[in-house]
Amino acid sequence: MTSHRTPNMITVDQALQHVLSHAHPNATRRVSVLEAVGAILAEEVISDIDSPPHDKAMMDGYAISADDLADPSQRDDASIELEVIEEVTAGAVPTKKLASGQATRIMTGAPVPEGVGAVVMIEQTEQIQPSRVRIQNVALPAGTNIMPRATSLAVGQTVIAPGTPIRPIEVGVLSEVGRTEVEIFAPPTVAVMTSGNELVTPDVKPGPGQIRNSNNPMLVALAQRAGATVTDLGIARDEETAIRALVEEGLTHDVLILSGGVSAGVLDLVPKVLQDAGVEQVFHKVHLKPGKPVWFGVRENESDQRTLVFGLPGNPVSSLVCFELFVRAAIAKLRGQPNVTLPCVRAALSQQHQQRGDRPVYFPGVFTETPGELPSVAPLPWQGSADLTTLAKANCLLYFPAGEKVYEAGEIVDVFPQ
Image (tube, rainbow, N blue to C red; front, top):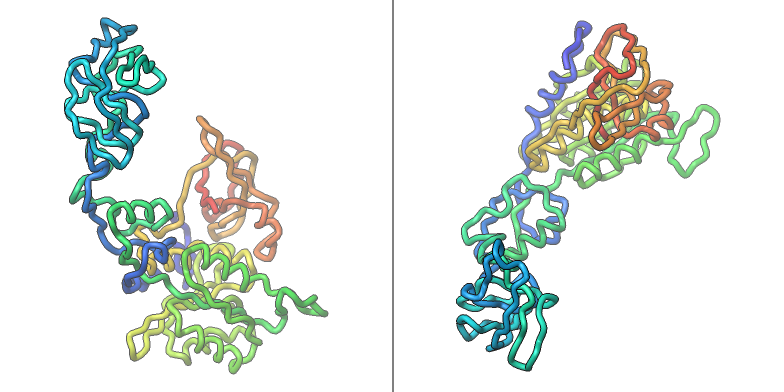
């Protein structure tokens, strides 16, 4: 994504590289496998067993000798009567080797006896005496309904690689190979605060000149979805003392997200407070729309604790776009994810779109996938960076490079699904 940037502003790609160069995976810790759900694995997990531990039956039925199997190409309606020499249930072990003319009644999951050629499912058999069975069709390929030993897992095999997100299925695999604890990257801690004299909490009906604070809840939810442990610091009034108190608390976390107060207005006090708190500015302003005023810095204290600090614009759509482009990637890297950038796909515009302006735009839209066809995307009638309602109808962000252009229906564009 290249663009013609204005002086003193860096591109989105440059800003992202700055962020990632300062974000390092968190220290690891050992937890129970159930505590690890949602975290990223920090070690290689190797199987200590074969699975299955034996050649096993895949069906309830009868194990028959390889000598009694008919050639499938010659006799597809063959039948035979066999002597039943024993019954093996799951958890039991066969004690008798099969010979020609013999069968072992067997249950799903049980070890097959020595000399077996195939397992015939119970539906293809008829018990004619307590110890005799008629097999309706023995024209089966050798190995039918048998899972060989170590088909799923083998001793010494890597079953889960480092960097893997731990889902419930990984918990099952870990348990299968005898792991009750596992090494994970510690989930990053994130603090979120908003500044602004006009803001009230969502439970308060706004008075004259006031608006409800939608940014804090939205950013908390975004950080939680990204895999962080989140603290909501609330609202700071546009006073240095109030902002400083919340900033100092936020700097005890891995990431501090501030919304509002990073532009160039009289009450945009955040950059000064951050400087006084020892936060080193890395960049301020990025060549994009919405979200140009975004601020990023780093603070390292005497204990080598590093906090990544993001000052996001106060308009909610700007905050969301900047979170998705920069903050989400930082959280992903801190938590040990191997892929940290926002997934991008290609889609065809379903309608004409007029792009204006000298900055690249991330535009809300509706992304639709149809089997066998190229995905399509429709830009929404977005009213600007304060229009959170339209954004709620979107499931993606479209990317339009800087410049004046009419995009016709059917043109291919970059899309970032949400």
